[in-house]
Length: 465
RNA sequence: GGCCCGUUCGUCUAUCGGUUAGGACACCAGGUUUUCAACCUGGGAAGAGGGGUUCAACUCCCCUACGGGCUGCCA
Image (cartoon, rainbow, N blue to C red):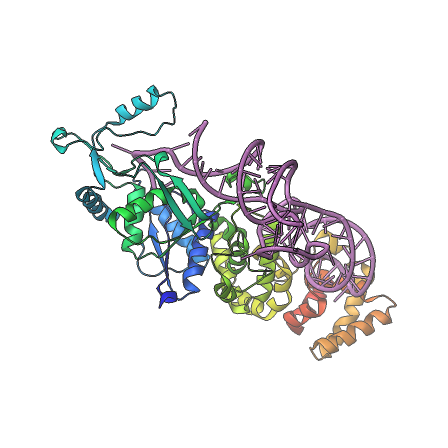
């Protein structure tokens, strides 16, 4: 079945944290595969031994996991497959689609320096040399014997058909003089061996696709479906970098964005399905396709990210929210909620999750239920606790002692109380807020009383009065 | 320098030759309100510029401008 044979992959190089753009690339691959019952594979491109670190690999895995992107099978290390890459290079040699080049790096540098056009394409003199003339024991690289005339067509699901003139490409090196493979060879061999059917990656690889196709052709392998997606830019339209703010996926987790909101936002960044804006991951899985991907780079917009996260915060399941909150507290080096706080949180999230966009905000709004007595009112809310107000709070407690602890009954009592003192409800709500939360901005006073329960409510009112 | 890609409201985008160019975020005004948030109503806001093709172009073609990418024994 064609639809279930989809295999995609994410292939980052482990030289740092998981970049937000990489996270989105991974997300697109994941959505495409998972939405079609296919497989999503993960390969670490660690052939650059100088820059690759196990810490970076761990960070990438953590970032993907946080985003909720699970991969099939074991993580593949490209470096571990270097023998296989060399084997393919030698097979290309045997097939006559590659050749040994003995030109030294000094010779190539000299060629560039000597040519009027400093960007001239290097043509190896060994391309058609008789093997009998090969120097004995000298180091050599294996270069692809690329076609020098005609053009290579890249059939891309996002970019359309892209034409590359073959005479603008040099004979790329497949195997270095130390016997290690270059990226260009390794990706192709790995993608083929791993059965990758759809290559969805950043469009910085668009040109590379042409040269990679030559390897597929040389080996007689089926070319995968290409989908080169534009990179993400900063708010000023320039390539995303540190100065634009957070670029690492984990930074977003530490800032407290819920993963579901992050996924939704990233999915919509550079991809659209008519007017769909807010959707669950299941819905995204249903809708996602390659044709909805735009061709222009998209800019990161934190305001929209926050708005999207706000929707997801409100839609979240309470228990799941608690779990994610605890994870957030852990990564941001804060104390976890205690068992008692968890219970209270579960009872009261309903009245705060609709009004928070991030976990720090959620924590702030939920402060009234997480705090323990005595509640110390901040400067603004303290103003509501003047002598008159405290008197009212004092006269209120006996009534609460005997009230049915329901919203309707509390409402009746508080409404009657404010009427009795000839004040509007707002005048009564302010000191209540100060007493119960120590803040001026809080959830509804009824909700706070309901969540805190009769005893805690009365104790806090007595503290304030 | 060469080659490749891109360009619709401030931002993300819809449109796939014929629309008063739609939605969302943001912004502004008003409303609701128990503070904050939310919510409701309304508003301003776009086809980079220039040539074609066509009865008709945001949509197709060319040029220019601007942005990005590739041009490594990096990935």
